[in-house]
Length: 491
View: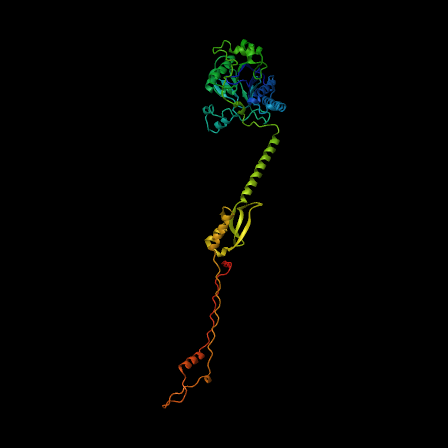
């Protein structure tokens, strides 16, 4: 490892703010380490999560190893595991989590680890640059080009974070290295400051005065800008190690030792002499632990809803099983109710080429028949007009059983009735012939007429009739329709 050529001159300050009743931020500043942790969870005690993370991470404040990023990743993971243990011991802490932004200094560069929406900034040669990227919903909108940075500050979901150290989800911190130079100024802050102060205002404050002045002014400016959150800032100057050894202010800072602020502090901030010294004599007055504004009218602390992917850790499988059973019960009840309704429905359709009444609905599901035959009429499809037969093939819905019977009766009236064959006529008897012996000859009066008998008119007609052919019976008409093209008439 290259021999250290730089040193840090640092200050840290945390304020509960003017609205919240407790401080869920934690901060730390030391010779090799700067940390900001913003607790999330509201009633789930985000202060415990943030202070736990800082207490784990502060162990890195020693001569760092060659691999800064590996050290940071391991410490963040240990903080994750410790929070999981606390939740396991006390289920009321379920849902707690914290952001983490940490800078580990090796004398020439810093390794940065970041999870959540606390931020890290670098002021170099008067230019301010943001080192970290927020893991928030609004940042995803910015990345997609849907909103601007300015719009994100007033977005209704601007506090919704997507990643945090929660003891449940695997930690996935952003990790990177940054080479430092004398004159650089580093700022780590919670969103209580970065959410209300834009880059221009941050650069203006950081570009003036000492690190002590900077942290005090950042807190005061955030309060004046209307911040409703806890505010925590850690500021560090990068100075030349050789020059710093002879600098009285740097020596004084070194005797102060590490600074632990916010929820991670062993005692309330107002009892600490170093915290008071940041405000006393400052032109803006003391902005120490102010009383929260009463009557905010918020029945639920929005901090409880801040961390989006928060999920229950305990008995997750049991909740899934209960939910699945409830869902299956609802589906079963709904299916039974639906099937019961179908069995109260009727329709008219075809069964074996005859008009029939069915109970149920004209649809089937795989493995389930939703209708059954109720009764069959004597009317065949072939006996109906084509338009009516087509309607029956498609199915005719009925309101109830009586309505279905009326439909069948109407269809019956349209059916063709088979014709009744006419009876064959009986043959008429022929006239009986009369013999000649039965006729008496009529003699003409004497006068020279012939003596041959002459038949009387009656005899001639009778004779003609006897010679006429006998009449034959006429053929009966044959029917042109027969079932199933027609319906036989009922007797």
